[in-house]
Image 1 (cartoon, one colour):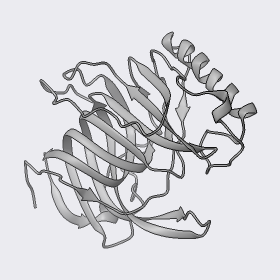
Image 2 (cartoon, rainbow, N blue to C red):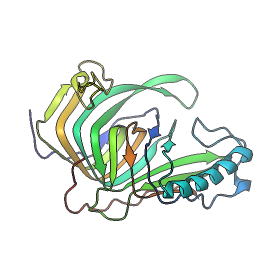
Image 3 (cartoon, rainbow, N blue to C red):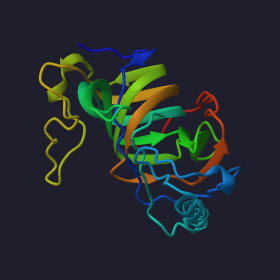
Image 4 (cartoon, one colour):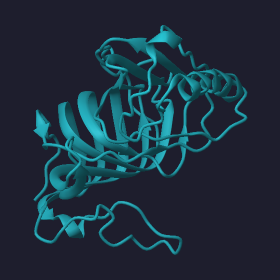
Amino acid sequence: MSTRDIRARDIKARDIRAGDIRAGDIKAGDIRAGDIKARDIGTREEGRTHWRRSLFVAAPALLAAVGLGSAMATGALAVGLRIQDRPVDFTTSSLYGTQYGAAVVDQSVVRPDGTAGTERVLRMGFADGVINGLCLSQRQQIAGATYTLLLTLGDDNPGSWEIRTQNTVLDLRSATGVLDMDGIVDLNTNGADVKTVKDATGAYVVNPLDSPQHRFGIQARYAKFDRITGTAQDFQIPGVLTTPKLSLTVRPGTVACPAPAAPTGTPGTP
């Protein structure tokens, strides 16, 4: 079964366990740890994120983030960002990737009461991709107060597709936007048969999305998402991620990513 124009509206899963984002060879601009005061950081433990338990750990971590921003401005570091146990909201003007696959999977979670369970999510993967600006927003509770970690990547040009990725995996909780798939497109294929990445020998990795048998799956040679606003809790880029600019800010309260701009032009080759 094939199609050339599919609109993805309100793709929904329920709850997800978070994984991590690992970015290699990031060339970035700046990181700012702004609008956060030492007296506001207490000793409450919150999940397994990079926010630590007290002022004595959190304050140096913020100072280290500022130092990383300076180093990344020179392209001196390969940096990873881990996101765990909480949803992350994201927006992007456009995401274009090759060898796109998606499947419904069960993911292990730890509930707020500490018990273990599983939740059903929609897992998407790309072998190679280009992204036209990306914003990630994650809320943190520190000593009873809400703070938002805002991470923005890329430039302000809606036609540059300046961020390059490899082996991107995203577990969706919800998303709205426009999806256009091309090439050979299969809908309702067996999720365990979806193919995205290849191994060192050039053969496709078997069941790269770790889907059970007979789950709903999608396979396409190319996929392009425009003006995406969504929520995920597992956002992994274990391959390469390069961006000309990176900005990290910490703000009090709940702060959302800006609405994505409409892309202009066409993406280059991932």
